[in-house]
Length: 355
Image (cartoon, rainbow, N blue to C red; front, side, top):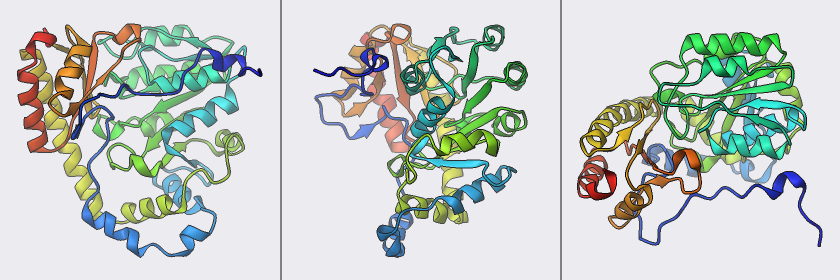
């Protein structure tokens, strides 16, 4: 029987653990707010030709490039942030090339880098923040890509401005690219997108899946110099995102009311984040400082806490099999008062598996 290519033999398909219990409060996927009724009504207004014709992302790409002060060709629409990572690794990684990717990090970044045959260089990311000094020291002749996920998934940690500046300079000196994965940037204290784009070889990943709550539409975007993005256009399919998804995002970006709803949701998440960290500490957990729309916490029995909450209809993320996260759970913030109070109440009766 024909076997898969060598890079695939040690990789498995992405699959978050699922509970056997019925779940009605899903806090394991870091999804954003539920779509407002006004957005759902937009579906009935979509031009019929959107469904018949092949989708064109040029208008949305041009609008996003202009919004970030980039020239034409400086934005590439992809099927969520995942496809942006895949294209980047296909285009610039290969056997013999290295990628700097601290651990723990977003697991699909690791997946696509290994699929491309690259060698991982993985400094340890602790609660102290992104290991900028060590990452900078480990950039060498074989380095092709430096990945900075900030805020980091799954920890919520960030890199500071000085750390990113140093990495950008070190990467440029070796003609390496630096990707700032800013999928959760809207929830952070500072958005470093403009800084990353101001340096040669700086790329930024953005998505409409998190703060906009549109993960089901699968609309991501990679920003950078047109000459760096050009090979990525050939590294995937010509029509990665549906016309309906593109049209809906264009309508939402043009709506002041939708932007106001998003800002209110972000403010609510930031408030919940501080309250959840405090509540977890009071129960004996060790939450990491987070600037995402979630909190990662070290607990006595991560699998036990996940199951205890699932029995109450609440899904949170545990990480069985990941050595650096065996004792951790990640809890997304619902951005809703009633759901958040329910979460706090449920956590309060799970202390035996928390501490």
